[in-house]
Amino acid sequence: MIVPDRILAGDRLALARLLTQIENEQPEGFETLSALFPHTGQAHLVGITGPPGTGKSTLVNRLVLTLRSRTQKLVAVVAVDPSSPFTGGAILGDRIRMRDLTGDPGIFIRSMASRGALGGLARTTSAVVDALDAAGFGWILIETVGAGQAEVEIARTAHTTLVVEAPGLGDDVQAIKAGILEAADLLVVNKADLPGADNTVRVLQASLELASGARRPTDPHSQPEPTEEGWAPPVLRTVALLGEGIDEVVDAILHHCAHLETTGRRVGRDRQRLRAELLALLGDGLLARFLSAHSEEDLGLALEQVFARQVSPCQAVERLLARNR
Ligand SMILES: Nc1nc2c(ncn2[C@@H]2O[C@H](COP(=O)(O)OP(=O)(O)O)[C@@H](O)[C@H]2O)c(=O)[nH]1
Ligand SMILES: [Mg+2]
Image 1 (cartoon, rainbow, N blue to C red):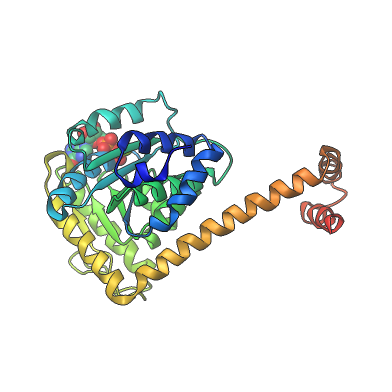
Image 2 (tube, rainbow, N blue to C red):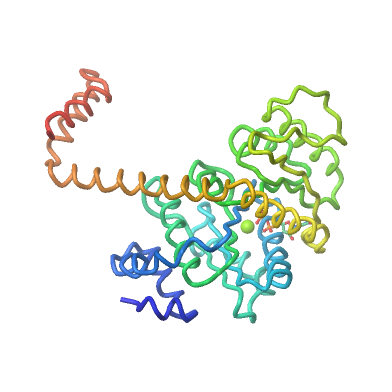
């Protein structure tokens, strides 16, 4: 088991080893994590999500350097890309692009691949974030590809969520506004150097107005109505490749951070995140307990009855649970 004090003292090798244990779901990793838990709750979590190829990693690279120099806090990045296996191009690509960041011990980057059952990714990410939080990272940036439920969940549990778009992804704008737009605290139109950026900004602003239920004519220069939290998600433009617009994004992150503090919403988000984690673990635990108390045959029998359309899945579960009492 990795000694918690080593993590608290800033030992990077111990931290990397702990994260590997967590990713591999080794019990000793969770033991260390439990010992570290009282030291968590200090970090500000920033979720960065959006379709692949919009420049999230490039933007994260810039944000890390700017946050680091402007706030002096330690900065960690968790790059979650479920579409790529460990040997996949995206992760290697991310590693190469994030090369600028190495050399500063105040910056720590971790790439994760998806594994395990549904929801496993969100849970593992949560545990990794807790470890980084305990290790003293004041900023933890979590990059996900805004494709599936797990990624949306991860982005939602951050204190500040950035949704990144780019010109020329018209259909993706449509796809993205359904789920993730409501979770966005900041919208970034990256690749503002490309033609069509104005249009992307317009589409996002219109979508935001729809989402917030504001009934106003679509005006490219208007900002959306404040949401019930008193925060109107700004739409910002960047050229991450050239570092343009990055300071404005950092300003907006700091502004949102202050907004969460002054309105007391930060506490609410933390509570929400911990509640989701608790319920997920409870679900896992109950399922494991159920499966260990029942033979494979019970489950097989239920499946056959459902398969033969004799009982519905709902009825089958009701019966299995009733027998468990
Ligand atoms: N033209 C342009 N290209 C960019 C910009 N930012 C990133 N890219 C390029 O877009 C591609 C995808 O970037 P990446 O950061 O990997 O996107 P991700 O998949 O969202 O993480 C890369 O080839 C980047 O060099 C930008 O501001 N303008
Ligand atoms: Mg990326």
